Image (cartoon, rainbow, N blue to C red; front, top):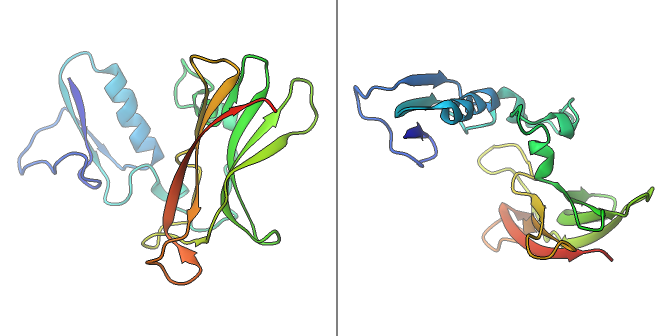
Length: 200
């Protein structure tokens, strides 16, 4: 059996002094985490993998940026880390129903509109040139970074066609929820949403 240790996040205990590993990956940014995942997928015998990272896993320099002007320069449909699943990344936020309607889960915040970070889903009918959007969860307060981490969202979005009813898609999203413990007008709390959405 393969196992990956993440002492930083507490999902596995810190290895004891003198513990041995079959593979050690130094650096737990996006590349390091994906290297560990691929190693786990390729294990054919019991193996121990140590992933060494002093900060948050999966971020590294690129994804830990605090500057909103730093954008990905790769289209989402080319972001998969798996050759056998080229649209793996895109599949998390895009789904179609049995009628061919395309649904996209996304978040939005707009200072001009006075909108706090909110959960939305967009629908594009076959052959349509524009999308219609539905608000799933209205943001209640300004979201701020936790412990000096960058403000980010979309990490927990997912969407998929309902396995029992092809006319429905299930959407997981999040919005900024007002937190009574936080300073006035500021929150550090995500509220998860789960919705079943259909055409129209």
